[in-house]
Image (cartoon, rainbow, N blue to C red; front, side):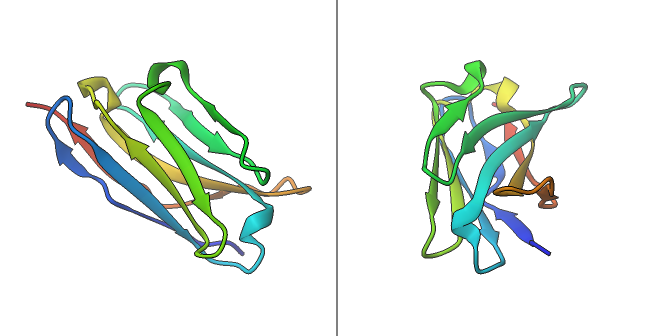
Length: 117
């Protein structure tokens, strides 16, 4: 069982920055593909950023150049640095883990991000 706990959400004005962090249990974190998803009001939950076990990253088009995902295998954490935030970034952000070579899919409870003036 993998437990994920997100932190760092909150309210920010347009143009501001936030850094989300996801703490992950388990001793084989380095073998997890990690991702951040966003569930915005009236929309489905979509992936915004992903980082593989080899640290290859991918981003949704809407956040490219503004968001950056990183992982720390020593601390079992994955962070999402969000810059130049816009109101459309508002939503609940979820941390996701997929252990390599499995069909398992783990989720955190989410953290709310609100971008408004």
